[in-house]
Amino acid sequence: KNQVEQSPQSLIILEGKNCTLQCNYTVSPFSNLRWYKQDTGRGPVSLTIMTFSENTKSNGRYTATLDADTKQSSLHITASQLSDSASYICVVESGGSYIPTFGRGTSLIVHP
Amino acid sequence: SQTIHQWPATLVQPVGSPLSLECTVEGTSNPNLYWYRQAAGRGLQLLFYSVGIGQISSEVPQNLSASRPQDRQFILSSKKLLLSDSGFYLCACLGSSNEKLFFGSGTQLSVL
Image (cartoon, rainbow over all chains, first blue to last red; front, top):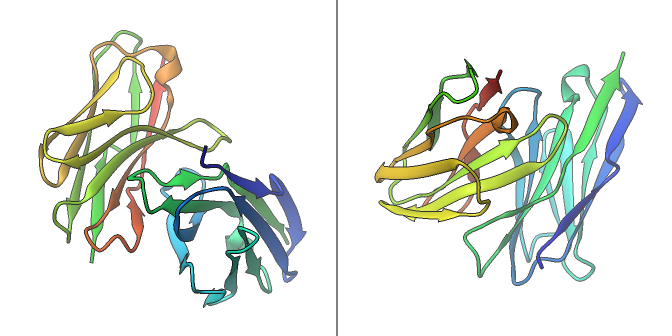
């Protein structure tokens, strides 16, 4: 069964600090992995999308990594801002399915 | 570019009343369309998906139904709402390029 596990479940950091969110998956065959940011009461917004051959992809202060061998991905946030407070969702798409597999998300709170 | 229009943004309905949530997509043709529900503080639960007009697959048996009368229109319905139907409903679209899963802005449904 395809699964995506995210950790930690929640995280509280101080403004200006860095943090790293983890995503482990058991999706096969792997097609791509996406990280989304979801503000409370809003739809998720795509941050990065990575295919099998990509190891790192950046989007401003967000940097995603992918290790297809260990089936792990991370999302690193640099110099966090209050507006980074949100839920971050890892989504893995399988080449053999119309249905992406979602992680439960990591809830990030950035305190001033 | 692809955009998703989802309405209404919030909805308060009494138990036993009908429901109709509409989602329309622009900027792509023959997309895969999805309805998700997100309970407070929880991950996204796939309810229905559609790969074409009139083609609906149900992932979770319940009193909700979905229809796709046009290529870029996806409707979520219920004849009689239950208290447990309360939640945040998201429409999503995977375009023909399969590059990115786009989400609507969501509908917060409260059944009282």
